[in-house]
Image 1 (spheres, rainbow, N blue to C red):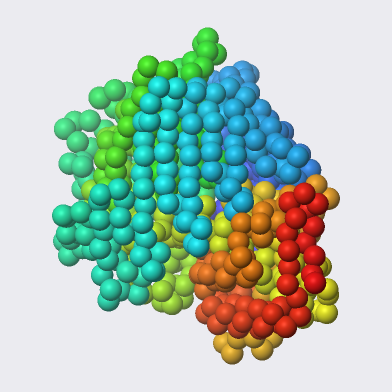
Image 2: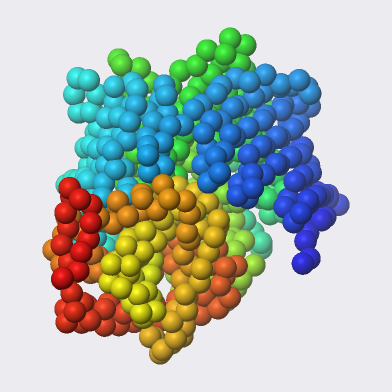
Length: 580
């Protein structure tokens, strides 16, 4: 297998060189113009040690993240260290506690407890600060219907959501949204009384790079990333690693601020403070601000909306701030924590957010540069008309899709995890029936696989990586072969999957589980697994178009079979499912 070991970008007599080093097929070291990065791995393939050495404006900064992972690859503890030479000092240790089913339960000093909905998504987060966030879901679709937050004294945030039949957000509290119906993916047309303008476009150069933003003239490095911005004799410089993600920002003649990113959630600022962004289900829940000399720390608790934007921050019992954003992310950002829309890193000099390998400007509703994914796989864009515009954000439907990577617009992770988990569950159930297994075996394994698929996508756990079995069913859909990958893990994890499945059965009528499972099956893998699926199953992309038909037919045939053969009952006391 060919691997990239060296890359040089040259333009206008300037060259940037990147080098890559591997061990047993894994990237262990990379060097780039601003510094270097060293990685060590856990047996599950997850990174358990990351070290970055960066030099910005002649000043060196070292940041280290050490993870203590269990055999599943879930973090038990994480330490964050800082240094200016080879000696580093641990600034903060964070512990993680799980319940008997391996669900994250608490983070001491940050989160006291998490309660889960039967769909395996959190429905209540209780913070150590006294803040409580509650999330409610629609029964039929599992879409978020309400988010509220209260402290010890009062309610500080509440949003109620309503959706149309295509699962586009049509109303948030009293604010209404409309969509164009002549677009394949339904562009957002209006937000309240504001009709959105997609006609006027900002000026770009021949490479598709934005020339001016927020009153600043922009320059780009040979790799096509913004490298410098100049405004009123004030400069800002931007630095990147060998994968193209942001590692540093330095400012001159303004505040001389230096921001170093060990990763997207660990920032060292001016070699004086560290900011540790904690996430749950890939959504920010808190920021720990620690002083380097004294090692004293303060926790800022976050409340996030349905797509993960920070809408409230509790800095202390007496200091709470709320924030609001337009659909495309325009709004105020906390000037100390510097995170807002989607919880991502914000740069106040240009008023831009950094999403993976690209920077995004909410004022223009566009990325600064073209989508690099098109250079990797142009056919993927040609099959999706709304991806043909390489600069627009989230297919012009930012209330339905998010783009954390700068390359792919997907549904928010809560929805992706649930739909993917449910789809995998019904597929496995159907496959087991076709294999001649009993009804009990089929429903039990279907529950387990569905639960584990959802959990794997939502939490990034290594369940599916540990052991996989591919099921291929030919002839279900005329457009191709449906492939599905399922995992089997330890007995305690099996118990978690079965428990989640039982709770699904307990809350619904007969076949409600199947109905909710096949709902949205056509876009399940495109949201959650499509990015990684081709590596697991060649030809998976080609089968996506047949998924909706395949799942519908599978559901109908399974329903017919069950009607003629079985009925099922649930006993919450004995935790058994029985066929009669």
